[in-house]
Amino acid sequence: MQALIDTIAQMALPLDAQRVFHGRGGLYPGCEHWALDAFPPVWLLTSFEPATDAELACVDAALRARLHQLAPEQPLNWVYQCRHKGQTETRLMAGDVPAPHIATEGAARYLVHLLKGQNHGFFPDMAQGRHWVREYVAQRPGIKVLNLFAYTGAFSVVALQAGARQVVNVDMSHGAMALAQQNHQLNGLLAGASFWAHDIFSTWGKIQRSGPYDLIIVDPPSFQKGSFVATKDYARLVRRLPELWAPGGHVLLCLNAPELDAAFLQTLMAELAPEFTFVERVDNPPAFADASPERALKVLVYRAPASYAAVATDH
Image (tube, rainbow, N blue to C red; front, side, top):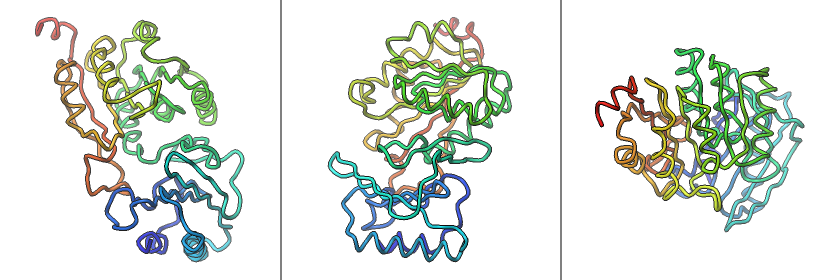
């Protein structure tokens, strides 16, 4: 775990939520099971294999030493989570976790919960995707956005902050939608957002009637039994994208399944929604560098036709 300890010894004091060490990227042999995130003022160490007491003591000592150098007046707060063979163990190792715990990313604020569950309310790996949405909307104030698999509404928050007129958030988790509403209130966004705690496929008619949309964001789980399985359900979504778009709008397609590469999405779009034009792949944050980029998060941008007439002519 020396690479993790070395990274801690050299890290800057984080101000926003971010990944500090990404062993999962395969760039540090022997450290593939380690990840360290900062949700100031708390650090979260995640291991995908059981850690020994000696290893945890080394991390504790490294964090204490670096924090003493960077901000000696700050107490050390850190949480350890082990995810192994379908089991999750979470422990508060030092200090406290604020309640409520608010993480920041630029101008946006989000509620996070590090002591329960594997999903903490906010995903640092999507930082560049959120930045892309903020920049896109800022250039097109007043647009309407559809946020599918909205989780706790981070995309919606940045879209509204950047000037979107309306965002429709859809996620089948009532708990996630409740947190999304709290995140909007936390950012002073009291109008412009809808929160639909529905299964996307069973409520498609309502989604379609609320359109068309200038920006469609699709950020599903890669595998969630009873909800979404990328290998079969992404095609169902892509096939129906042409029912939702506004002329000249864009689609942001996200996929975080290591076993599926970007070509999986590109093939689906070419076959099932050929009227959309590929624009770019959004880079992941540097902290998430991966020895095998196709195993990492994929975020692809597509552009809709400039007019409905153009599609009619093509067909």
